[in-house]
Structures are given as structure tokens and as C-alpha cells.
Image 1 (spheres, rainbow, N blue to C red):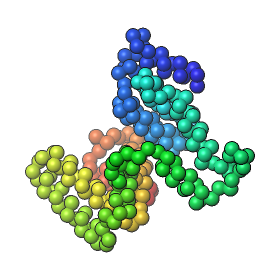
Image 2: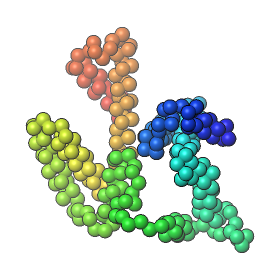
Image 3: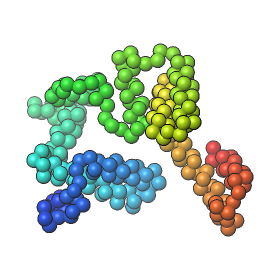
Image 4: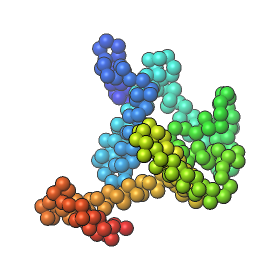
Length: 257
């Protein structure tokens, strides 16, 4: 770890460091942090453990990068990051680590939540809004979290049929904007339509992000099936008419339900 910290400091060192690394800030690096986390998940999904070891290293670089930026700005350093998480892990595991009186406390679900609530209470209060509490997850998950939080204060459709009607309304508004050719308005209405679909899924108790990921995986498997079938015929997608591709797609659906 010391070696990696040294490399990061040198990359960010004024004059002699890397120009690209010196230009980065929290926001620009934040995008890479998300990307690297997804690449870790992808390696896990593929059960490619050599790739997982490499991707975990790429992900490990991200908190070091953020901490070095913070240190350069006089905000905090990597030691502070490590100390914070060590303190939190010990505090949240009283059943493992003894307290100042040498006592090891039995952990229950209620105690775990009590510890987390105490941590929130200890943080400085900021003037803000209810939805400020929701982190910026990927868009689909973010939408579901926002809706769930709003529902805690009664801002929610009481009947499932109303949620369904909202989808119909948003779909009609989207189609209207498709006719106008205004891309900005089309994107806005498409976003509203997606939001209403997430709300419907939430009311049904579905994990909308997991649902879409499952469909992505299904599409990949079916597309790969078509690609393999074409390879056995020494053909390519661009050499194959749509009717044949559709037939192969239907075959792939039977093979990969």
C-alpha cells in the first residue's frame, strides 16, 4: 500500500507529475470510480478471478486518488479515510470487538440499526431536503430509492391502477414529442416514462435495477446464440437478412428462456 501511495503522490506532484492526473478533481475521477466498481462486478459475474484481482487493484486506486486530491486541497488524507472506516467497523461490530470496559456485546438486528441511527445523529445537521439523504446511485436504482423515500411521507399513489394510468399518460406524452422531432423534449418525456415504469415496479415489490440487469443478461445470451449460429454457417450479421435473424432470435429464445 505504501508503494501505491508513493506512486499516487508522484503522479500528482506539481511540475514533475502527470499532466492528466494533475488536472483531475473529485467529479472527474468520480466517473472512473463508478466504472471501476462495475468492472469488478463484471469479473465476479464472469467468475474470472485473474481479472477480478486486476480489477480490484484498479478499484483500490480510486480511493487513493480521491484522498490525494483531498490532501492536495488541505481537506484530509488517506490515513483519515482508513481511520474512519476502521473506527466504523469496530463501532458496528460490538459482538466482535470489546468496548472500553472490556465487554463484548451480543449483536441483534435492533442494536445494529441503533448503532447506525446514532451515527446519523452524531453527524452535523445540514439545512436541506428529505431527498438529499439519497445518494446518487445509478439512475434506475436512484429513481426507485427516491420514490421509496417520498412514499415514507405519504407522497405516493395509494392505488396500483393510478400508477398504471400514469404510465399510459407518460407514454402518450412521449409519443407526442416523437412527432415533434424535438430531441430535448423527447429525452425529457422518455425519462418521465422510465420513472413511471420504475414506480410501477416498486409498487409490485420488484427490484427494477435487478430486473433490467436480468434482461440485459438474457439479451446477451440470446445474441451470442445467434452469433454462434451464424459462425457455424460462415456468415455475419450484415450478410443475413432480417427474416433469418428473426428466426434465429426465436430459436435463441427457446434455448435461453
